[in-house]
Length: 485
Image 1 (tube, rainbow, N blue to C red):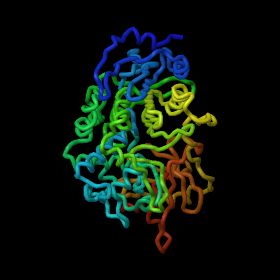
Image 2 (image 1 turned 45 degrees about the vertical axis):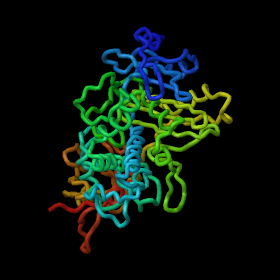
Image 3 (image 1 turned 60 degrees about the vertical axis):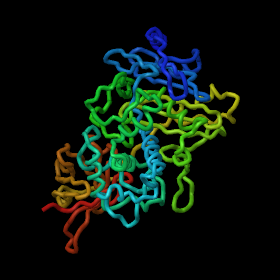
Image 4 (image 1 turned 180 degrees about the horizontal axis):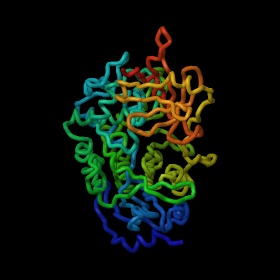
């Protein structure tokens, strides 16, 4: 085996810079820990994407290493200074920005979102900034709405397009504050609130108020795909045969729910600042646990998850997007912070962080729990049972339908005795009859083994003629389409 971490050491010139909590080494820090090397041995080989890991204790960086490659085209190894897309880890920085603005007297978490984004619809119940920051607003997910409108996940979009999309939505998923549902939409809109309140983009605001004061020189909000980002990692995914391919989406340069680029060392600068001895003034604000309308606590702070491991309270957030996986985890009672960032979509940093904590806090934690899950996503929806319809019967459902909410047109037709739908200019996909006037829309597979993308239920007038349909997909329910004349 080629131990890349050792080759990286040759490149290290032991650069030292002064951070927010005192001197911090720029590259590898601490003695070798074979147990941790073993955890990352899968990536510590040629031809593999990799991971960076950093550990701080008592406000000081005590361990950092890089494993594998940041860029396989040019054989550039991962180091603790490699810059990763940390995806949803970004959310805590949006929440911190809002908390700072509240401390400044510029806004209140009790504000109606329409005070700052009046373009949004006036629903039956008001949505507050607090609902949004705690994921209890009930907003539909823009990451689902845009594909339903015919734009795939690599299609470039802007903050304005997201705001326009959400301004067309006629319904919520649930009454604000009724329940918790993780919301990327909320944080994309909150990033726009930061800009409207402060007069600065999210990147400008966090650079001025967080990154620069904490000497987080490797950190930025990715809001310009033409920007040069030194030491940036490329995102990769492994196929079933373990072959590796690039999956990085450079087009997606809208920061809010994600799209923060940073290093594991910078993440611990932030984590030590937030939870350290001299906590910021907004600490009680950002760490306040959310509550539903029923009074039930949701174990979520603002942009952070509240949990425990082996009887020890923890604060963390994970991130996952386009070949990147990240975790920042704080063991509160032990002043231990762990940051892991990988450019391999088939990695599970949260599980690795637990094992690292087992090493550093071996005698201080409670009983070892049952084996942690891999963090794998649940199986996708499977298509429901089939209803047999003739071509003539299917022909009744053909036509052109438009949704004002999605600003998208669906065209239904019968091809080879199957009903298909073309969403805008995308290739046609099969539509499977499952019950009277009800169909399942499949993903872009060639047969009925494909996963379910959405379900539609056609509506009729008093004469029995089809007038449109209602579309459900995931948490997005009741998106209305009408016959296009």
